[in-house]
Each structure stands twice: as structure tokens, then as C-alpha cells.
Image (cartoon, rainbow, N blue to C red; front, side, top):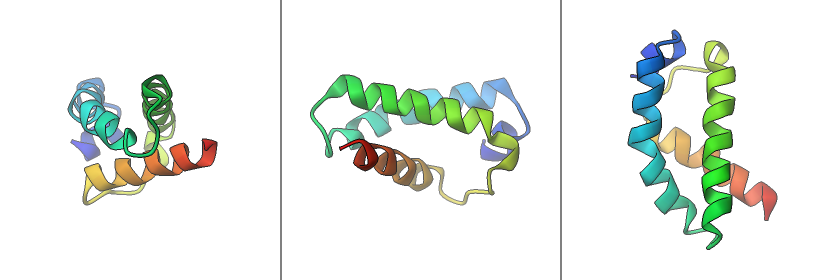
Length: 78
């Protein structure tokens, strides 16, 4: 899925978003109770990923890559 996303497959992007949004939302709740902030940060994360997809490294574990990225964003704003 990651490789297809990096190659610009819009369906792969939709699958990434729909698969990982709920997981990331629950994870983000561990750092802040502000649900709207968590939603916004997840959306920003996916926008940034989509804009930089050609330059992203290959990822072995998508979930942990996204967790780390979201955690960095949340901690950066707290």
C-alpha cells in the first residue's frame, strides 16, 4: 500500500487514510483530550504526506511511522 501511495495511486491514499485515521485518532487521545486538535493534526499529517509522497522513504511499518509523525506534531504544539 505504501509503495502504491508513493507512486501516486489515489486509492492507496484513501486506503491509508481510512485504515489509519481511527487508529491515529485513538493514539492522539493519549497526548491531548482536545479531539478537534487531534483530528486537525491527523488531517495535516496526511496532507503533508500526500504533498511529499515522491520524497518519502520506504517504510517497513506504516503504523509506527504514522504514530511517530503524529506524536511529533502533537508534542510540537503543546
